[in-house]
Length: 609
Image (cartoon, rainbow, N blue to C red):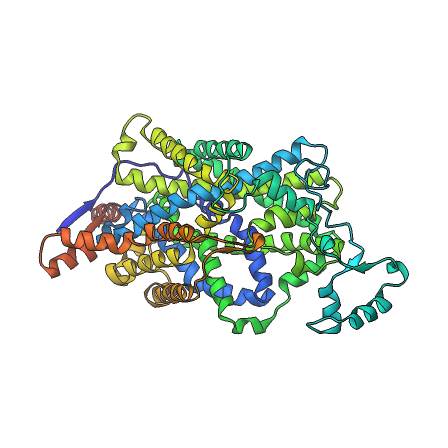
């Protein structure tokens, strides 16, 4: 049975540069700034680049090429792409579900950044610099004001003992509480319970954080307002289609590089920058013997490249059929990983400065995730002249990094749905209305993340909805669909029909063996090592019903794959052999390939004449 792979007339990029800039804008996001540098420092410094590069070559680059070329081949989004192996269409549905959840909570980070940016502009000085505000508590004290005491832990570490005695304390006082420290004491409970104004601004002014998920509290209306503004910006970036989006990304993708460069120049001139960079890059090869380091490398590649969400397929689908997507995808991979390393220089130069100013180690001040963006960096710039300027520069960069990743993920979701139901595009203002309605629904659901208990909701979504195991599950079957269902030789023929030559045989090895094996292996490792979500910063353990809801988020995408496969198998008529043929390797004529063949026949006829 032969089915022509035809779709309604759809837009294309104005040029190949639009495609590259869109991929760069999408793939390079907050994970490059807040996750990679910390993982590098935590997992052996420069030595971490070894498992990272291996993961990139075995998994990241092969899947990036696969997704972008798959979209270009069929000129269709994340659901229609599985017409070449229909039994795996559940992978596309799972990707759409995961992208929907991701769109709801990822954008909340941008509302936080907008709050910091607004407060940097509108006050005489950044409001997290001192303890003179209504949200501050009696325990507030600047981290740059040295408390004239040493803790029991410091004294115990000096004597290398676990239990302190009066003799230890007396001897320590005789040695150290002299000269400039003559008035120092052993820290009391009150001394150790001080909280920095940076942390109080984050907890009380921005989040208004409650005691837990069980205490949602009221909506933080300033965050809700900024969340609405960011949603409107993202809507305006994509509502007109890719020709408009292709122009927007030139600004949103390039501006963060200018900001990073400015911040790097300033960071490298700071006292202590070398200390931070040493911690960032100094290799500790013994770490390579730990399995966690390799798992962190693989998961970082998957997350930072934005794989498995249908966005790369959507971006590739707007290419011309004969565009050299192979070389362009490799270019984007190189830029993405290079940006991660580059961002590490920026972040750790400031962290080194902060550690020097606070007379602490880099390990004590370095943080991952939101803590790096909203605690470590805001603290690091407090000792700089023109603090407001550097604050505005940094949070503008965060907003631009996040906005293009957000609206490209949205584009992947909308492309999948609209290509599946082309009547949406055919109606006047059909796309604009559909995109607007989904944005409104997403915003309303997202309001749960900007309540007083919203941070706990955000962490729940982040841990479960786009979690490592759900993403790895999806990517495993995505790879299997091409390499084992469609057939790798057939796929190579499709690649040749697009770019004019066969890609390296290395990718064949990765797509057939290495990439699915790594995905499945890391998936099993993650499930075996699974520990329920806990927020150590607030000493908070989630209730059972919170974890149940979290697993609902994970399974809402994961179960789409076997569920759809079972449903379509029983729904398809025919014998077992006929079903396998129809569902795993149907005879599909690709529109672009047919046009190529017709052009070649016309060229042969012209030549013979």
